[in-house]
Length: 207
Image (tube, rainbow, N blue to C red; front, side):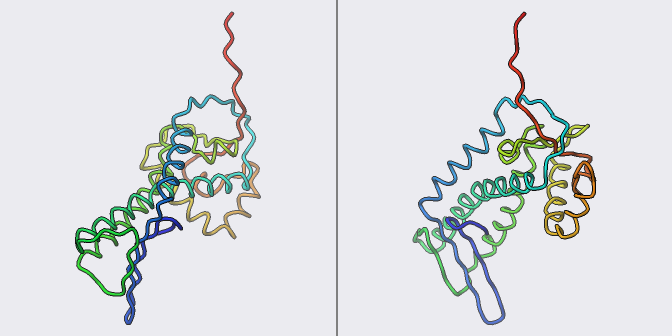
């Protein structure tokens, strides 16, 4: 699991085994700060004027990095804490740092927690789009993901998954997007979305 302050690793090989779970006290502050930023972006009354100018790929990559770090900061600490709690119940001693080179019967639970982390990460990434909201990264970078039709959470998760694939294949996907006037990526084309720059809406005036 990613995260310097919250770490959960299980490395297993023919001749070696490592179980590592660590949670730094500062991770509580990181989690609280990430939660505040995520909710501020998600719950804010998001009134904006679409400028019908496509967002640049640098802006979209910057937004991805912001959202990725936020989502990791939201998922890693609580799930690592659960793994440490299970370890404490099994051994009778709770510690914020566990490292051992032998297997225990409950290790499979930690393995499932890593899979759960990936699912939670995917949902956190996709939730703003499914609720017609902007992510924190999109707010900071000044653009919005627009769609002609509402996107359900399941479709939003599918778009996010394809977005990760698009990022991994950026040596192919980026040149293809740069050839398009609208700069749409694979996941935009597959789910009929577009990233457009936005401006602040004018305040309402009473006549």
